[in-house]
Amino acid sequence: MLDLGLIGYPLTHTLSPVLHGFLLQALGISGRYRPYEIAPEQLLTQLDALQAQGLRGWNVTIPHKVDVIPWLDWCSPEAALIGAVNTIVLEPDSAQNEPRKKGYNTDITGFVRSLPVNILDQLTEATILMLGAGGSARAVLAGLIQQHTKKIVIAARDEKKAQALLQDAETITLHFQATTQLAYTTLDALPCLEPFYAVINTTPIGMWPNTDVSLLTVTQLQTLPTEGFVYDLIYRPLQTRLLQEADALGLQTINGLDMLLLQGVAALELWQSQPVPESLLPALRQHVLSALETSQPAS
Ligand code: NAP
Image (cartoon, rainbow, N blue to C red; front, side, top):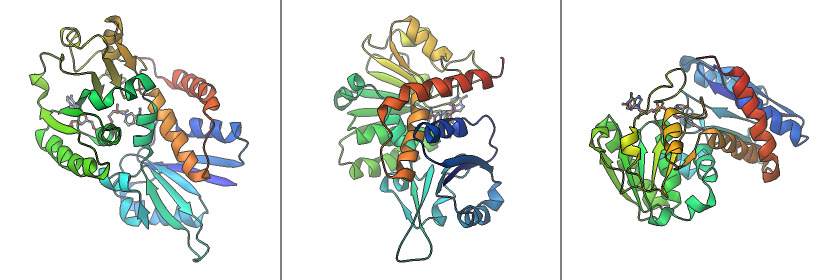
């Protein structure tokens, strides 16, 4: 019995149990995946309790992605570099009574796997504009550097946060032996997007219930090269205002659904130590989409 779960606080509207419930059933794995709402002050005792209950692993979401790290025996270099763990694996250790507690970040894998091949092929020559400097920006940045993106410009309202992120990005660049150039700009200083191949929104601007807003105007989007693309990490709604407007201009667009699915797939691959067949993805996408539609509160 593969006992899995998700920890976070609060845990409302999470799609992870739906996603993993589908995968376990489709793969014929006897297992379960349950949410555990854990308040920050109880984190360490509850992590021990989950281990004592025999869980094989669990996902970690806000606000615990950083605070679980001291509890672990080992952290993957990528998770350590971005300072956030979203997947814990308890690996049986034959030499010890206790399993090894290992931490990973599958948001990076999920983001990279969500990029179509035509885009991945362009990254070494591309300049990418990232909007935001929060938690998901760290995973996106690491993914872009891992793919040896030529240049990344971060536009964020909090310059201190963006500069701290860029400082960590220098270490990530060394780790991946990349030569990615890194820069910061204010959100106000973006009249023309012509130098960019793509814009990636990592902020919650446009997310339900405030869906009628976008960080970029149509006039700004019109300056993006026609072969460029716009990626919005938001998946509630699937078509944010930013994506609707980019789509209307004929630009390639990507929403946050595939990243969500693929970080989950990558987590199950770690728990199971074997790949999930790609052929399952269309049915998984359909299943999660249906859950998203039925759980989507009317705006
Ligand atoms: P976060 O850590 O809170 O970071 C949000 C970022 O957006 C911060 O840089 C924040 O700036 C900025 N921001 C917030 N409001 C802003 C505003 N009004 N104007 C300018 N910048 C603003 O959040 P997160 O975890 O990165 O999540 C961000 C979004 O990504 C959410 O919509 C989430 O659902 C989505 N997401 C999707 C996936 C996926 O798998 N598809 C994975 C993770 C996250 P300050 O620091 O100044 O507040």
